[in-house]
Image (cartoon, one colour):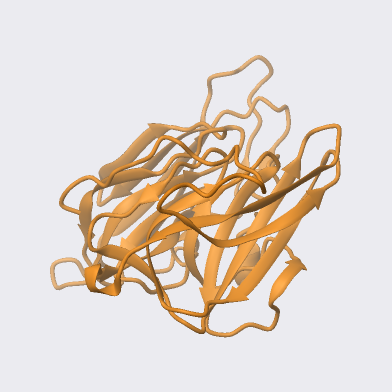
Length: 305
């Protein structure tokens, strides 16, 4: 997904499922406790990639406390956004830029369940529009047809103390130079950062990069909240203890600094650019946080969040 096209994407540790639904298809049973929030069928030709979207209006208020990805083979990633208005509803062909400004959820290959801490939920108000953007990538010799979507658990409004959403930290518009022939160890780093415009709390991080990525670090004022090797085929959520990020103050005029560092080993023999294809690269940390509000890509462009 070319996120550039959009603007030119707890006091105790939350529980964390190890059984993603990436193997589920259109006929799979919905697991106990979950309901299908949004989905769409698709077909993608052999050795091809593209985008399919679906937008629907929500009939009743929902308070979402957990997400599960329905991502059968061929689903490169999915992004769920929300808006008060819509020009298009139903299923439609789309592009990487077919996203709303506020993000609710994102998932890639083998993304596991994301269970929020007690008292935290994402609010989807009755009458708003949710949009599911699917990046489909078929590397097989045959056409693929299946259904991808997003399942959720909900709680009663009375159980919700803090309303959450998701934003991306990271970088756009970069190029990863090729290693010299035979060099399989030299890494190339891409760094993106921004400052906090107000106080908020982080409770889950989700790294998203592509196939030559090997490591990601997410820093808050020089302290690593995430520092882990990366595997494109297992794009996990990382829950953590509730961590407060401070906005501007007399002691810190610009607010806390958030920084994402992505590391790559490029043995392809060619420069790998930032871009939407699985053969290009990205550098994002998905930040689940509360209170909700703010543009999904502001930090990736260096703007305060």
